[in-house]
Image (cartoon, rainbow, N blue to C red; front, side, top):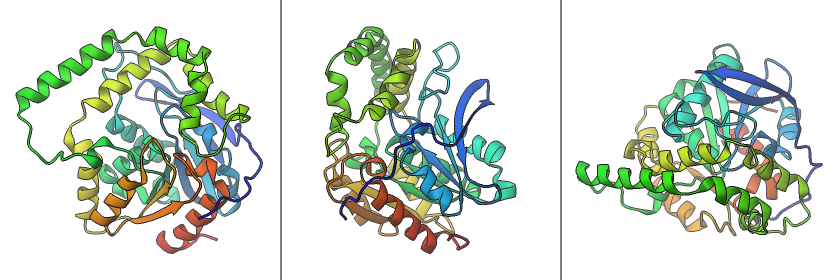
Length: 321
């Protein structure tokens, strides 16, 4: 599918608010009329709710009550340290999302929500749907990242080896000088290279995108939050990895509809992974966008918005314009 002209940028979209969950301060956004179909956007690694700048207004105008949540450690949500929590992983964020759906979105009153996630947000959406199917109507992952999708995690590893491996990972990240590395990267061209790596088209003139990524990373406690993420994601149980989540979903009595969106030029999570999982799990729908990298919702927003809306009309039980 080809890219079309992007709608006007609006990084500060909707109404912004904070919500306290389990002692953590969480930032979120909302747009659209009450009593409409709830749709929750979940950002990817290093991003925030602002990254849905080209999508929120579109879906609000199409009959959705749009929400977006900054996951703990990202955006304007709290960046906790090890005294408050030992690690951050997709299971922790899925619990945050589930609580948000219950307490803020109020799915009991307004109905199940559509979850739309970019990259890490897609994995969190999948995790939420697996453990809280009563809250989720359908899920879109754009794309779905997880190293486990390209490795054989079904091979049983002795518990002793796992313990040693996890201990070494924790030691490595604890001594890794992120407090020095992150500010250095932000002050040099490395940050521009990193951002560009996620896109196919040039991001050189996109000052708003750079601000979305850099501002949270400049905060005092960003390094310690990143350390907790690295430890958490690297030491997860197999039951929290994408293959096991997908197997769990497909074995449920009524599997929820899942759309997987991939950019053909994605350099971070190659399309071959999307092709592989679409063959392994044919009940998933895979769509590929041409001339697009790792952030299809932001790089090809018009095509993304139109295709997702059309898919939702056919896979979310009606009541969508």
